Image 1: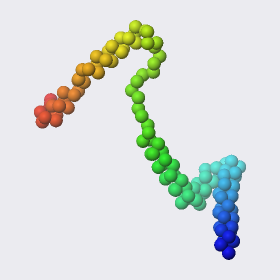
Image 2: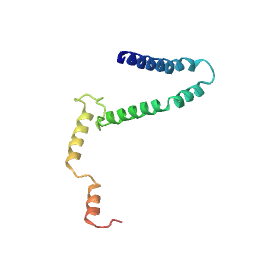
Image 3: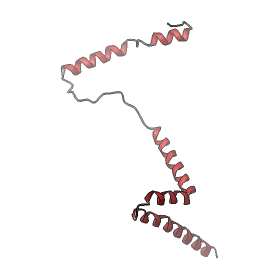
Image 4: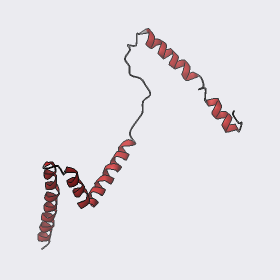
Length: 114
């Protein structure tokens, strides 16, 4: 009995999937493609919402692995004089304090700026 109910349940799910995917075949057969797409979304609104939420969650999860790089493209060879000047400038500017940091220190200490 249990095998029979499992088989019937599987067959019903298969028929629903066949009906769901067969509607996509008819999308390109006429000028009412947007109406057909809207009909599919409304007919399967719960499935559409779940798929949308799962995809959004996956995109948010993958966004946590994004790393930004502030390095420029290395288009000059390391022996180039311009590249050497750039590296020297980059090293010297990393040692100095940024110009705006004094503004933040003044605000944090309570001094008003004009």
